[in-house]
Length: 310
DNA sequence: CCTTAATGGACAT
DNA sequence: TGTCCCTTAAGGT
Image 1 (tube, protein in one colour):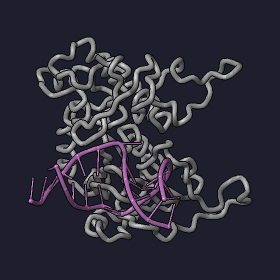
Image 2 (image 1 turned 90 degrees about the vertical axis):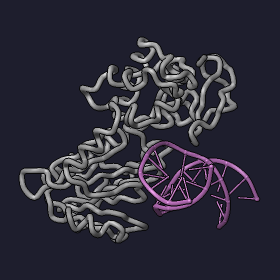
Image 3 (image 1 turned 180 degrees about the horizontal axis):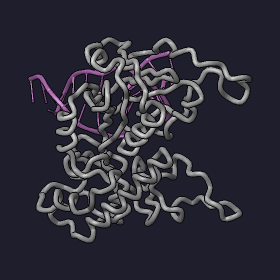
Image 4 (image 1 turned 180 degrees about the vertical axis):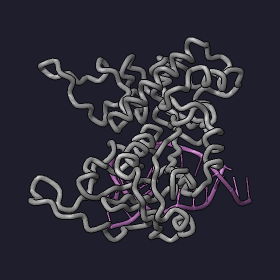
């Protein structure tokens, strides 16, 4: 999936294109008919994210009355389209291994479109569209989520309360993270994937942040030193904010990327030099040359360099 | 063309 | 431990 950075981009995008507007909400697939009826016609006050949870706040008046909670899971995704106010609203979700696609669908747009044509409404739904949100200016379709439900504000609050600190939410600190890791006999590689310990980190940020900090994925939480834990948290804050800005996960430092051109300018980050260890098993470590290894950890693939991370 | 694996996690068994 | 969600790109034939 979309790790936390993608969900925060989604929240920003929903706020940009829909906030303050009354939305039509439907379920072309039919599986979300009851929920759609609860939201149809209400105003979207705003969108927010905590970890991998996307929360859309709706209300008929000033107060938030209903919250649409979406979890994309492994392969859920949103696609967007509409008039010029939707320009730049890209599709976000999984799988997006090469970065999020830029499938903006507009009517009367583009360099060769000539005079702008008025937006005439969303297209016929394609595939299994669980929910469609639609305004006078454009639409958003959700396919393949693992969760899509309507909650009360209190229920939504309870969902967020169950989660650990999110490096992308300002105001949460290293301290909360350290507290949840300290004293635990569980391996660091497992703790980083536990959303109650740290919200928003997925399989790529797990592997890459442990590599960057030179930490052994099997180190029990209780044996993580305070300085190492603080550095790990701070690196995640940096990496994930980069991810929000770039729309993809890039963790290699310039000097390990082999990507400076004749003028000394950074060359584009190709898909195959964006990561240190993720999906690089059998290849040489970018730093020391040792073969990168892979093992299953909690039913997910863990990648690490046995020399750099010990 | 067909098969497989993929950034997740809830739930059943 | 297995199943679902039921998408999509990559890789093999």
